[in-house]
Every structure is written in structure tokens, then in C-alpha cells.
Length: 507
Image (tube, rainbow, N blue to C red; front, side, top):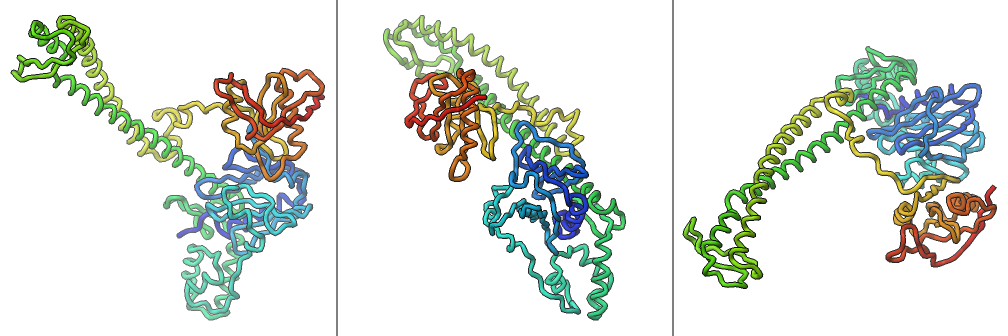
């Protein structure tokens, strides 16, 4: 199978490019605008942006002039590295990883193990002091030494592809196939060593190619139709992969939505048919009214059911009656129902036609989606993206950040209540004492809440209250578990079970 992006040679090319362009620069910012992207800004004699995108079980690298800035919901990452200077970028020999070393003794480890790709920050400790993809729990305890690649010393001649893989595990199947074309396994020890040296030189200077005859497109290191050398070629390959990933993701979303809607329509059609059949086959309300009038003289007052002969069929039927009404009045009640019954039949017939047409339209849409080949096909005749059909739900709070801690500030009284439900019991809750204002939640992170974070949150509570014009504002500051919502309380109204007050000093 041809090489994928996640290979030792790919990471060697990336590390070589970063060493050339980032060495000596200062890391001025590191942030993420979403969980699938991490952005580094490096500044000095030149300004570079290193962007990592996580998609389809892969981690892609882009190194370009600074062009993306933190959005309103951006989260700062790896604050320990702010204003740290890059000393060097070191690839891991024979593995899908490299390190960036900083002058403050921190080192950032980039591991590209496919869907387990991650970024880990190491200081003096054995274990990482920070990771980007925290959902990969195993990385929290990864010591740096565990990433070292252990390989056997080559003992030439190598007789089989298996023995080659033992000493050169980073060789891809494409490279193994190339060695076969050189009659590698029939060479003596010296011949094999010379061939390996020739191969490594060829790889170091290789122009990369893309094989679009397979899905997903394959990255080639020994291509006869190269797209370029080094990082620019890798970025072009990554762009093609990302276009494919986003297309497939969009296609799957649209298919799921269309099939779900089709399933709903088919269920609705069956219900409409069942109801119409029921109306058409049962004794109509008008006929029941006629039967009641026919036997009105024999129906005793105050009965809830009458067993009468159906003169349409000659069979005995049970007819429900209102015991508070006379027989003629019960007949009139059935006649009134008969009018609604006619209207319901007409509406059902119309609805059946509409639902049948909607099902045909939905089936055509599914066929059209399945026949697409790129994201461009979704524009125009396929309408808007399913991701934009429903407006994004507005959060009940405004998001702030201090020292790596998330801080929520409630929007209006109902937003305060909703935010209170979302908070965990060990989060910190703040509110200006004795005045109306926003609830503030500091999300739990680690064992303690730093003083500067609590001070910042208290200021937010004061500034978002009726006391915002005061110089010093007393603010409740307790864990969320000590705040309750009484029954029938007004929106935003709570009871504080444990009173602890701090002063917020406003400038």
C-alpha cells in the first residue's frame, strides 16, 4: 500500500522545514478556535504561523505567514511557552514525530500516530505538563523516553521483506517495492548497504507525488509524476485530503438528514393511509345518527350504550350514547361529528398527495447526494448545508477566560438559571451581594482556584450587576453545590447555603 501522510519521512520533511524557518523566533501566541485546530504564531526577523488540523484520523501541518487570529471563543493553549524562543526542531529518527526545543527548557513533542496524534508539552517533569487532545487519556502519563524507537542493528545481507521491516520499520511498502526492482534481496552485504545509502539519498532529495487513482489519495515518495519538493508538496497533499474529508463529512451529514426525513415521511404516509382506511370502512357518524333516530322510540333515557339492529347489514351493533341527552339529541350529536368526518377525509386525501410527493422529492435528493463527487456539487441544486439548516443554539452565558480557566457570565435571569444547571457541583459560583446581577461560574480545573482567577471573576460579577458604579463591591463566592434554586422562585433567584463574601475592587 502506498505511503500515507503519517510516516517517518513525512515528519522528517516537516521537522527539517520548521528547523529552517522557526529557529530563533519567539512563540507569541498559541490558541485554538475549535477542537480540531491548533495555531502557533512565531515572531522575530520573520513571522510564521504553524497550523495543525485534525481531520479523518490524521494530523496535518501548514507553515505559512500569519493569517489567522484568535476568534471570540478562542482558547489559549500551552501558556508556559508564551514569549519562549525556539532553539531547535529535532526529528525522531525512524518515527512519526519530532520535538521543538525552547530556551526555557520546555520541549513540545508532536506525535503523529494517525488517530492518536497529539501535542505534548514537557518541562522538568517525567510526564507531560500539558496536552492538546485531552481525550487521549493515555498521553497524560506518557514519559518522553517511551517514544524512543528501538530498532535492531542491520546485519547484512537482509534476505526477506520481513527482515528489512525489522531493521527499517519506517520504510513504506512503496519503498519496499522499489527495493525489489533493484534486486535488493539477491545482492551481497556490500551491495545492499550501497543500495540503502542510494535510497536514503534519493528520499532526502525526493519530489513527492500524489496517486489519485486510489481512495484516499496516496502520498508517494518515489513518484514519476511529482507535485513538488518538501513542505509545499506536503501542504498540497494535505489540502487534497482535507477537501476529501470535509466533502465526505458533509455528504454523510446530508445523507443522514435526508434518510431520517424520508423515514419520517414514510411513517407519516402509513399513518395517513391507516386513518383514511379506518374512516372509509367503519360505520360513518351520519349512518349512526340515522340508526339512533330509527330506534329513538325504544331507547330509554339515561342509557350510555344501546344495542341496535344495523339496518344496513342486519347485524346487532353497540352504539355509545350520552346519558344526559335524549335519543334525538344524541342523533344530532352524531350528525355534527359527521360534518367533521367529511372534512377530515378531504384533508387526509390532500395530505396523502402532499406526503407522497414529498417522499418522491426526498428519494431524488438522496440519489443526488449519493452521486456527488466533490463539495462543489452541494452548491446550487442541492441547496444549503445541513449544518446551517438549524440556527446554532445560543448559550445562556458569555464565555471568558483567565489563567486557563473558563469563566461563564450569565445572560439575563433565565440564562442564570440555565447556566446554574450546566455547572458542576465543584465549580465556583459568584454573585454581587444584595443587588441584581449576573451569576458567574468559574469552571473547576485542578485542585485549587488561583487567587487571580477568583479576583477576575469577582470583578466580572460586580461589573455585571447594579453595583457596577461602586468602587468596592461585596461578592458572594461559594462552590456551586452550596447554591440552590427554591421551588416557585423567580427567574435568577437562588438561595446561598454557605455565605462567603469577598470584595471586588473596580478601577
